[in-house]
Image (cartoon, rainbow, N blue to C red):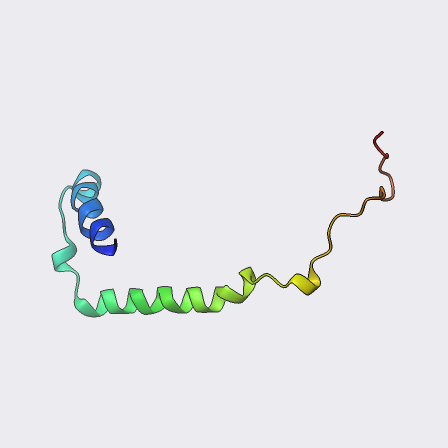
Length: 71
């Protein structure tokens, strides 16, 4: 999937946007650093999306302050 997205998609999108396919000119260490940065971002942001069922409170059946009960 990555190969299709990276090469298949970029090989026609990049020339449309910038006029040439310049992936071959990017050094290997730049690719490595971007992969490391993405991995760190996912690992650091992962706790923000964690679901904790003990902290979940379903909506109340009784109306709150300033709300009307619907018949």
